[in-house]
Length: 192
Ligand SMILES: O=C(CO)[C@@H](O)[C@H](O)COP(=O)(O)O
Ligand SMILES: [Fe+2]
Image (cartoon, rainbow, N blue to C red):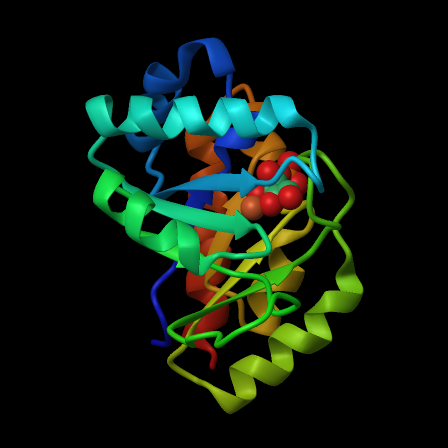
């Protein structure tokens, strides 16, 4: 058996007016982590920055889940301490930003950063495959366009941490989608 599957619904696709109950709903459906996209005004609509400021605060009060914070910012280190104190559990940075990139988990984007609901980019699987060959026990996270129709490609390439927004929040039965993705990762890992 290889590395453990971790399924992380992206809160970007949740009902923003009911964040705390949306978070709990995903945990009740079997989510391992909650994925928090943190963006800057320069790259993304300001409303999202405002939203995430508020949502982190809400999570502090209401949610004890593992918060997988995806920092789409140019100065990620500046966010680590305050967000860590505030309850964030793990961070991913973008390789394009300056400075060191510590490797406990590698995130491979499978859409252009910025929005949920985009189409999965299968060409990114070469990168995942190369990483998995080189680092058999590393957590490798994929983010964007993951769902029932794309999970097998990601799992077979070696991804084990799966971020999924629209496919989970938009499903009539999110628990079933989470369970299907976990099964796909577990099966692929058992063959590695
Ligand atoms: O980081 C991002 C987008 O920038 C993601 O976390 C998306 O929120 C994933 O949403 P889906 O592609 O699964 O709808
Ligand atoms: Fe993300």
